[in-house]
Image 1 (cartoon, rainbow, N blue to C red):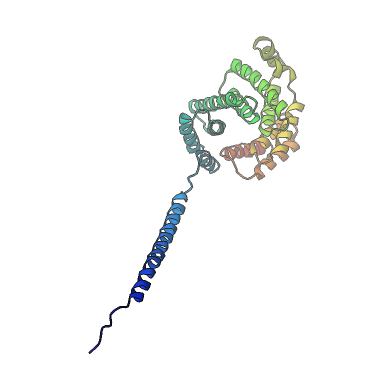
Image 2 (cartoon, rainbow, N blue to C red):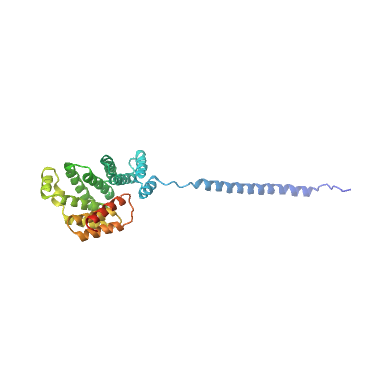
Length: 284
């Protein structure tokens, strides 16, 4: 028969003394486990999936040759934040590209005027920012070339002259600013002496009509290409300037250089199609 011995008092005391330590150990382990779970939960909560900003998304769309979607994203952003400068000038850029790419006069006019509107707003936000000024000058210049009558062309030409003078004082090597001014010189020199006289005398076309020159056109367009040779338009404008003066070899070289530039902007394909026609006219 198995005897059950009574517990001695000292055994009971030892067990009582072990109990608090055992409980304490369990509590510490539990707390550490909960702490680890809490830390993991906090770490998981802090890892929020990155959502591309409106600007990044619009840039991606624009350089993926989808300026319509880019402009849409930017204008939604501007409805909520009208003073977002980065969205403003990009909206001007996208609308200008669409104005160039669109053939219908009504839609072309609408896009170019939207570009001018956004560029005006960008200049209002940063009056001395060369990029803002350049997009406004480019929009006004394109409106003058593509959709305006003679009197408006003269008026806009004067505005573009003043904007580019201001811009190039701030940044003499600005690529788009130099291209716009070079193109303005080219457009004015295409006019006859009599037409320039009429514009200067009766249409307030003073500065561009007096001061433009073929040399000025070449100088500014060459400066634009030196600052950024990746823009097809700059090569097209320089080639046309040479072609209009009868400098066939130089025109051909400028056009061919433009065709070698990779397509980076939504307008590049259209500009290259124009270059091909110019080369065909020169007999390649």
